[in-house]
Image 1 (cartoon, helix red, strand yellow):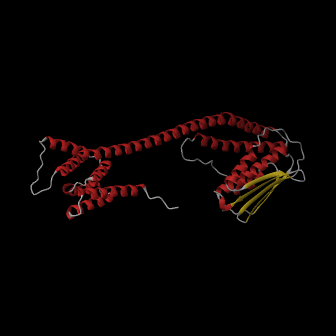
Image 2 (tube, one colour):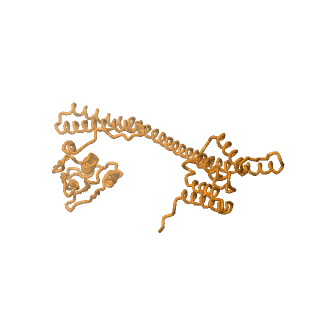
Image 3 (cartoon, helix red, strand yellow):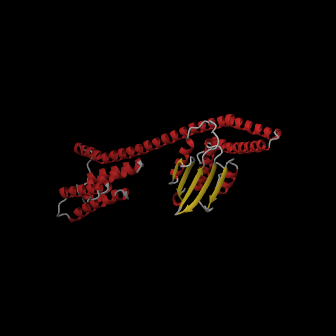
Length: 368
């Protein structure tokens, strides 16, 4: 398919062709000077957008010697579309009018006081004013289009600011609710666990109370970070700090309250987002073991091969009945979404021995 020429080239070609047709109609071939000036004026229209005033001035000699005035009218129109100097346009229009009315001879003769002279002056002035008004109209239309674009952009910006304000208010409200409800409840759990740890003589109860208190304090610390993020209504992204990494896996497993074994050969230089995905996957899997498979043992295997990280968390069958707990099954959904953003997959399902297995696979080259 042949590419279409740009509109500017087509307009320049049309103007030059019209000017040459005007020369062919109004200039006789036996007048070499007039013909040369008229042809030069027509060809100069190619430069009318780059040098509008200069091109107009260079077309005036052709108007003085010939009746071919289209080139000068086109140059004046282009000048009117670019300049905002009304005085300059009035002077140029007057120059074109006088050049068109002047009969070039050894002694210039211009009779403006006769009826025919006044009529000719009126028609000539109207002819010169037409491209000026048309050019100013095009300029006003262009300015109006720019203003409408600016108004549209301003409205879009205002809508974005309004949406951000609504989002900031919702985040602040959510932060207040989390602080007032969740923080209060977890604080009570920590206090009760501390009291139980001090008041009981049972070693197992002391260890359980200490674990509950430690996890409650850790939850409160993470909750404070989350509340700070929700309260931050700035446009720049805010990260939850501190972010977990692979070095925290051992501590996570030791504090999980599950008989779990970790086997890993993952390198330490993996991208932070990938390390967080591995940590959150293991965390969610161990949480599900505690909730749905009491008394089960767990095995965590993490390996790196073929430019991919593979993590498998499997548990045996439960030895005690599970305590009914509220669950919306959002944990696995969130893990699959996180893995999909990193170009990986999460699969899960029961095993033949009555246990459960969760498998994560992430390509390292696609991690962000």
